[in-house]
Length: 404
Image 1 (cartoon, rainbow, N blue to C red):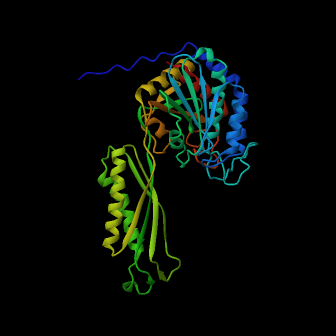
Image 2 (tube, rainbow, N blue to C red; image 1 turned 90 degrees about the horizontal axis):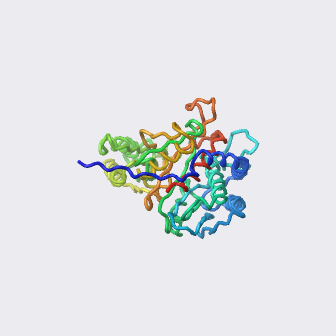
Image 3 (tube, rainbow, N blue to C red; image 1 turned 120 degrees about the vertical axis):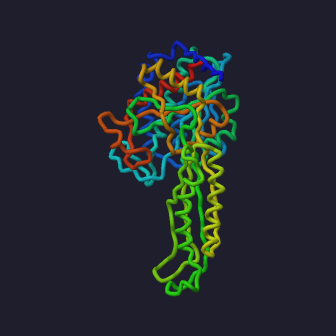
């Protein structure tokens, strides 16, 4: 057996500690933009207020800017005019449909809208990296493309931007995602699967309703639905190898209107998560098979539908090596850690990584002095970040554009 030697990653002399000093010099602007976006969060693909803030932050940087047609995305190119790779840096923009309960001066002023996943930090870090690189464009070759992306939280925003050409000519890509339960300022990533696929399923079991005192004259969909829930949960462990991580959860179950009526239908929905596209396809088929056959065994019919979500987020091994070496050059040893296992959350940066080599890294933003297990997780109504860590995100974005 022959072993391949990982390619050597050449780091630009500017990709060192001075880069962190420059990022810290931009910290007031980074924090100001983050708080402004946090206070006025927007959902989905249409984020006009967030887009306006991004455009204002990029004013005067000499970037070639284009706006999305099917979303309020922003693509900004820094073109040096010198030969070299095109490096894409991505930051997502959208918030979550969640009521914020954190008591801060920049608390969301919009009901059921909250930046509870750190996208406000992603945008502000990327904007400051654009400024840092623009002011030092003489150190660069090739092109840097800044991808400000709406619609990450379930709206396939990355795919919208890909369809509009954001990856045209791109050689490699990099993204940062903040994580509130990782020590502040540390980076974590891994080669191969980093995050899971995420699909939905919806099943309606149909019987024949009637009086609850005379079930023999009805076809009760509730026992069929109950059996389907148990069968679906058992199915994963009996059809998927123990070494292949997969999760199926029925998270919503509804049937009936009162205590003395057998309903005609019962409804359930849930999520499917995997780290392997072959396992993913197999589970899609099995959901239909289990639901249909279980319903039939109870004399019912059913409609089973799987709605495909994001694919598995798969990091390129060479690009993870690049990010690790870059982090150590800028921040020192101990700044970058290889994760032993993926996480079962999902990300639509997966669409980008399906087309070009690249990687995503998690940046810890847990407040110092807080136990990681006590920190409010991403997607919590109390989620917060340690803002000084954003300077490391700015420096890391810039350094990844400088590595050759």
